[in-house]
Length: 362
Image (cartoon, rainbow, N blue to C red):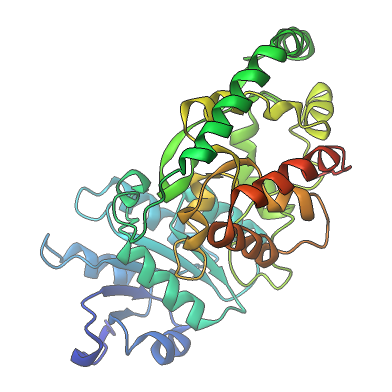
């Protein structure tokens, strides 16, 4: 066995322990992470498994960092980790020396905490690992995370009053349209009228998010495959897993669902979310849990420290544009979180109506 423990750097103040397995990227990890973490190196997955088997509850690593292999040993390792009482709380991150879409798809299906394929910046990996530990996203614990963020958001009275007036009046006026859409959905395809999912809003608060169903009932099961192959926000260089997922020409959408999405009628049930106080009329879009877990760094967590909303800067500026990058969308979210005001909300609301009719296939 060729296990090697990195030199301990007391000045870094880091007590984070990483168990690493692999040889192709070992030099990169050695040069980029050694000063920040206490790393135990293993040249292969079997060696890592032997090391992990000798640990106690006091010595288990915080992070398990594994290079993927063509034999699929990494796949079985992750499955075994999830079944282990001792190790199922560890942060698991997979690394790949190539840009294999099949491996990426399998990694997403395993629901590991992150996946990086070459080429990627070691600084990005180091920051990601630090924040996975800092925010304790060991099992998805976003409910606990909402209590740990440094800054909290309190809805201004004027903004909440506007939300109540708009949501109540719109629900009353549009009630016949709600009934018509519900009947059409039932006639168009099998399944429920409403789609409910967990979303992450202000301060990492998790809530039930409502839409009119516009997809097949097996849409969630197909997401991992489609996001690996056809994600608008995926990096062309394959450097890291994209934080946002937006599928081009999504085959999961029903015929009626395409019309509901293009007209944004599928979003109307979120008026109930606004009435309940889960979100505001204007703000940053609440994100699915798997996307929110990718946005816990200093640079991007700011978007969660402002109001969550039905419409926002992203919708009225670049929605549906093929050339919109993940970074551009994050910058718009961060700008609104820092600069929002009643006047800015009013301008966004006035700009939302023409934005609803933008043609998009994403």
